[in-house]
Length: 221
Image 1 (cartoon, rainbow, N blue to C red):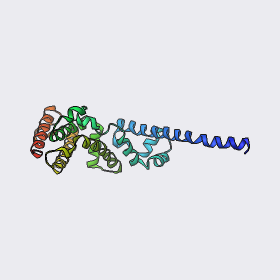
Image 2 (cartoon, rainbow, N blue to C red):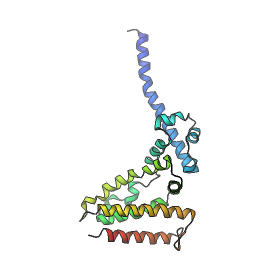
Image 3 (cartoon, helix red, strand yellow):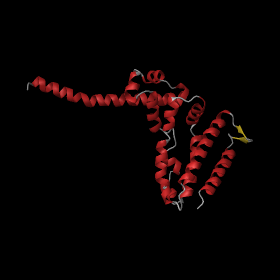
Image 4 (cartoon, rainbow, N blue to C red):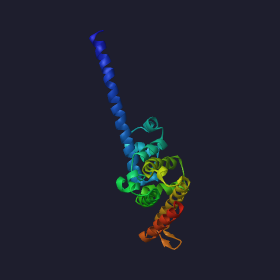
């Protein structure tokens, strides 16, 4: 083999890591652009052209690397603080959480979920859009809630309960999820509800206490 041929092989082989680095850099740039638009303009500002312009890339790369805007949204939601983290939902103290009974763990997670969503105005905005003008992007963002949910289940350990409470837990999850979505949207747009001022923390204290009482009744041994 000639020296030139050997040099060509070395050159071709050396290009692959660089291509991987370039792709990774471009992906991170696109994700960063999505994040910037989401934080600045909310879900209504998202679009393939808007993200491409923000990132300074050809929009074809969004399709090539993420399969389109919904794929990018799903990736972003799964790797950002858009949804509450597992640690946030269990209270940031795994040892303290482990000392609770299983029903108490469920109750804690439900109440922490309410507070965590209230702290996320862009998430609340997405919930409103999902109710009024759902599309592939809002549905993809919603998919991101699955990740912390799976992590939390490992900490709750329903199988350790004194009786089978899985069905009752799911009833509570559906109820609290719907309540939180609706009332956090109302808090931003029309805060008076059944005589309560949803912008008053006392109203949310009442709602959390109600959830605790319902959880205790549902999950009693």
